[in-house]
Image (cartoon, rainbow, N blue to C red; front, side, top):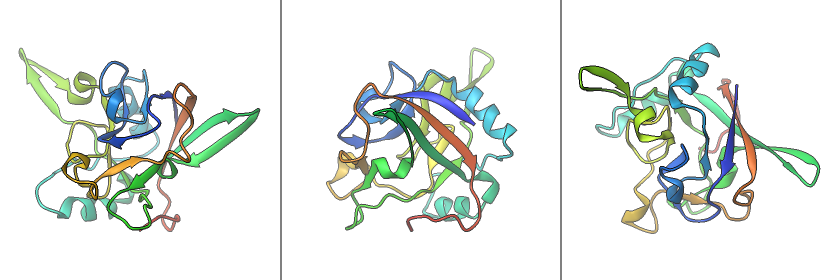
Length: 188
């Protein structure tokens, strides 16, 4: 399953991976016009099952990674000098908490939370514009599946953009979502 996106930031610390235009471009790598609820439905259609985000304690990340039908692989495809390039999204990230900087490839289909307003249920991701989250919160459709610190709380916490690998701002890309395959190579 693919969605269109655009690179909106090529350096800096991150709270999100993907958001809607006009929301969090100052702390995310990509923007997309894809409505988060539609991404949710598409992920269901390819056989994924949401594993709701529960920030209490450290156990959620380990539990989520053990749910193979909730794990999703995200790749990025774009044209560069007449050639189609396709890379795992983790190659565009640097983990500030690891000496080697390698960002894990753990992404979990969480589905977004719902909230009630004026008697109607609303899909939180549609309201906030957060499509894929990195910092621990429950409003995105997909969540980074490893505990990442808050990058504003120290230079050794959270994720930032890998300035050596990310395409330049304005580059049109396709974000490709596929179910995780058991045994797939991952940074641990």
